[in-house]
Amino acid sequence: MRELTPQVLGLVARRFRDFDAAEDAVQEASIAAVMQWPRAGVPDNPRAWLTQVAFRKMADRIRSESARRRRETEAGEEAARVSETGVDAAPLEDDALVLLFMCCHPALTPSSAIALTLRAVGGLTTAEIASAFLVPEATMAQRISRAKQTIKASGIPFQMPNAEERGARLRSLLHVLYLIFNEGYTATSGPYLRRADLSKQGIRLTRMALRLQPDNTEIAGLLALMLLTDARRSARTGPNDELIPLAQQDRALWDREQIADGVALLSAALPKGSVGPYQLQAAIAAVHDEAERPEDTDWAQILALYELLKRMSDNPMVILNHAIAAAMVHGPREGLSLLDALKEDRRIAEHYRMDAVRAHLLEMAGDSQAAARYYRAAAGKTVNLPERNYLLMQAARLGTMITELDKVP
Image (cartoon, rainbow, N blue to C red):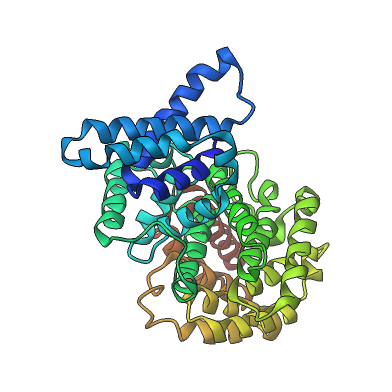
């Protein structure tokens, strides 16, 4: 159902040019399927079945609206023309891609685009999305409703954007998919380090986007990045969901098949043309994944890749990670010097990761007292419980070490 729903929704929205009503019609068709298919069996062409039912629901809706009676004949004829052959011949995959572009339109805020994408294309219920982001269902319903109203008010046509628009919208689309995956990989808040359902949705939706645009190297790069990063999932937490940093993970738990898939995707994408930021991030993840032991990591190569990435993006997280790589190659003082350049950047100056990275580099430099102070500061700024516990444990560990050193005569 989750695979078919965006295809059917895309087709219905394109035919009737009313996204909100189309979503309701497809939802009603899905409910009918859930009720009938277990008794009568899954039809030979379930997509055609869903489409026909959704078209009938749309026709019924239009007939019931007196202000739109002039469209009754047109709607009835459109519904009557639909047959299994006609549905199969329709460009449903193109419709699904248009639906993705529409949900990730630059007119929407990132939070609205994420919610709408998970609802319309991901097939999640409003309650499931609300639960994932730890907000009340009513709040999430309002967010999704506002997103749909924004699309309606903007007059965005349901059609494939032209080449120029596609470039701008593709950046938004990839960014939204990236945010969905990241929220699943490391939750912004809550009692768990990650939310596997969101990570899986990010990977599934990106696979779908690549299937619809197989020659797009940045979509391939983003999917490779997700696979290479998610491959470490089982090793990232202990039995009580405690965070285990990369250097301490049991690499035997890494998913080698998933790593191979990610590397293959990246290897196929890199020679095809210009290299984008997602491909570079995937290359960095691949270097980490291909090291059998932490000490085997080719930090010089990672540093060089971050140098390239910095030229493409002024993302402060890239600069932060570049500082870590520089510290691993040239020593912690070099990394700390690079961190100082971010002090005035409002986007990250008060982010917990700034303090956490500084604490790590100070510990590398031998300044345990300052490191403990910054670990505690970072813990006070994060609302993800496993991350906070990890940072507090690091501060406590260093505090114990300092106490023990003070006892030495």
